[in-house]
Structures are given as structure tokens and as C-alpha cells.
Length: 226
Ligand SMILES: Cc1cc2nc3c(=O)[nH]c(=O)nc-3n(C[C@H](O)[C@H](O)[C@H](O)COP(=O)(O)O)c2cc1C
Figure 1: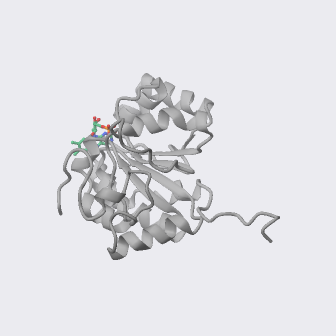
Figure 2: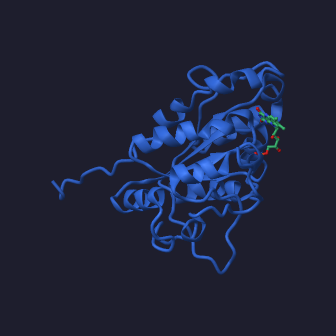
Figure 3: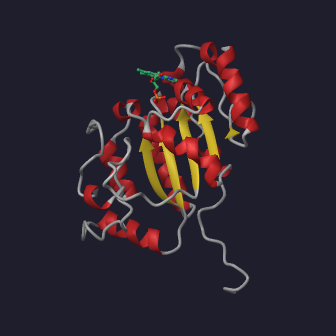
């Protein structure tokens, strides 16, 4: 597994991606990139998958695949800590876009805005910071603005019971739910696990629930278009 570097990854996709330019326009040629370019220009909606530093992060490619099958163009955003868990090269190949983990430079163009955001696996740390309005990572910055921009957010935590029982965490869930954020934790979502058992549960992390809670990525045909 190729381990991640900090900042933006640089495989063949790097120059054209995360820049707001159509993917492939600058890169020219690579199969996956061209496929993604087509996907972006065919009216597909854009799903941002924010991945945090917990065990299931290494399998985020499963959610990417499910989302692509549902018609989404996918942009993966990793927290800086999550880069150590993710096979950045494999995800970039799968999405045709670089895994983003830091804010752009002021001189760099904006990325295309998300139509929906999934945070999975969502950590204790990121959930609490999200609830508090902290924006000290690119991932949290996206989340901080999402409600104001009308972008739906679904959160699928991976948190053990020792952390999940903390009053600050329970308050965070309440506050975020009150703001309209969908948090799939407890019955019908991911369940808090016993401390020390997370490693055994990575393969059963219910990625599909996050996607199911997010509307389809296929653009709806409007009345006028029919
Ligand atoms: C091997 C390993 C596994 C971890 N698993 C979890 C986890 O399942 N849930 C969690 O909330 N934090 C977990 N952590 C702790 C987070 O990585 C840590 O809180 C980190 O600051 C989260 O950063 P982020 O929220 O920016 O991704 C784990 C850490 C390590 C080293």
C-alpha cells in the first residue's frame, strides 16, 4: 500500500484536480481521469466523502464504488490524520481526482462545490469539532459552510462506547441533529463498539447506510426537459 503524503497527492491526476478545472483538461489522457471527466460533464452530481482517522478509513474505496454506481462523481477529502489510514494512490485512481486534505492556496481556483457530503468514518474528534464550529482542517471548513450553502450532510461515526458515552459527544450529536445534520449512530446506523474491538469491525462498517441516506447522484430530469 502506498502511504499518503501530507498535502495534496501528486499522482498523474494532481494538476487538474482540486483546482476547479474540469478534470482531465490539464492532465490529458489517463483512462481513469478521462472517465471521471466525462462523469463530471455528463450532469452527474458531486459527492464529497470526508474520511477521518479511524480504522474503516482504509476501506473508503468501497463507499467510493457504491457512490459511483449510484451516479455520483466523487471527491474524497481526508483529514490530515486520516492520510495515514488511506491508500491515497488507489483512491485517486478510482476517483480520477486527488485526495484533498488541506485548504487551497489563495491563488488556486476553487473546487467544484459539493451537492452532498458524507462523513465516514466520522471520528469523535471531528464530530465534536464540527459541532463546535471549528474549521482548522479543510474537511471541517467544508462542513462549517455546508448548512449555510444548503448542502446536505450525512455523518456515519465509528466511535467506541467509552467515547460515545461522554457528555460532550452526546451534546455534539444533539446540536448537529438540531441543525439538520443526519447522524447515523445507534439503531439503524453504526453502533458504538466496545473499546479495543474496533479493529475487528472494520470489515462490517455499514458504508451503504450513508449512501442510502443521501439522495441519488443522478440528475433529475426536469419537467421542461421531458
Ligand atoms: C489506529 C487508530 C485507530 C483509531 N480509531 C479511532 C476510532 O475508531 N474512532 C475515533 O473516533 N478515533 C479513532 N482514533 C483516534 C483518531 O485518529 C484521533 O482522534 C484523531 O485526532 C482524529 O483526527 P480527525 O478527526 O481529524 O480525523 C484512532 C487512532 C488510531 C491511531
